[in-house]
Length: 337
Image 1 (spheres, rainbow, N blue to C red):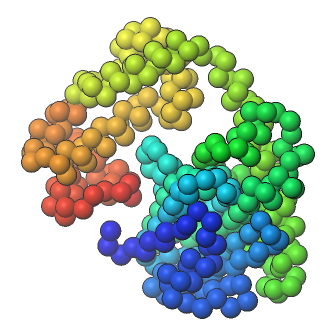
Image 2: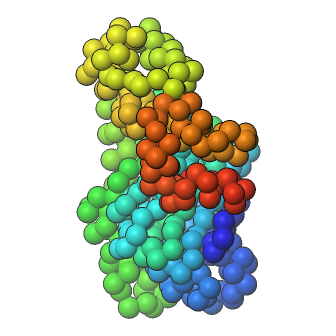
Image 3: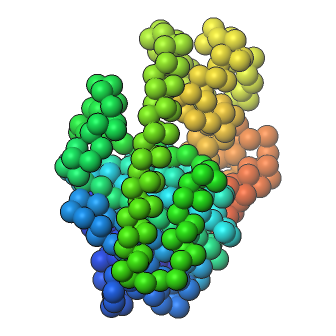
């Protein structure tokens, strides 16, 4: 992509070190100022204690920023990444699935053995607070707090991959706003950041466990046969994208009521069935544009759009470029803009 800066992070690499090396700027007193080529802002980082690393900063971007966490072979640490967007929006792509748009901020929780890709468009004004914890540090400091639920402990301490996102609540914004408002003194801020970091970890895991427990109970609503039928329906949709689907028709196909079908889609795919179909069609459109010489009208009809104009409008709204421009530039689309 043009006018963009990409930072690739190793699974255990400190954020400050990666930015400093890639931007060719020198870190001083655990901080760097971002150069004008990236935007206006700063990054501070504190190695609070062995196994606990906290980074925070603010940036108003003058170019598009990509943060890509490479997946490690093993689960050595986990990261809680709080992002508050004063202006603009971001996109993130988990280890599998589609890009998701975030308009006001959010919390990502992910382990070092998953791939995670964040996109911050030009002019985004973002505050961020990042807590990285090694598994040994968590065992030493959080084992009792995390509790005795074997499934939950296995998720956190075991080799299981973790990728979780949710909107940023005011409770978390208030939690670390003091860090950004404080006059920076390396000695005082080390204490303040440690205090807020511990508080963020405790509050997050308390909240995350409650969601985990609720999801465990929710999963009992759907039998194995229900889940098998749902994924058979998904295969049917993928094989018949030229059709005009309705909830009634898909419900009859699966033998579910409309309300049950919608609830299952939200539970297993975290989006509505219509959003899922739209995203599936657009992903297929990109593949056809890049991999075939079919004309745009043929692609539109093949994917169930009522006209090429309708297809072009939806494609451009989603990706920021027209299908023709996407094909002519011969550059794969990485996600919505």
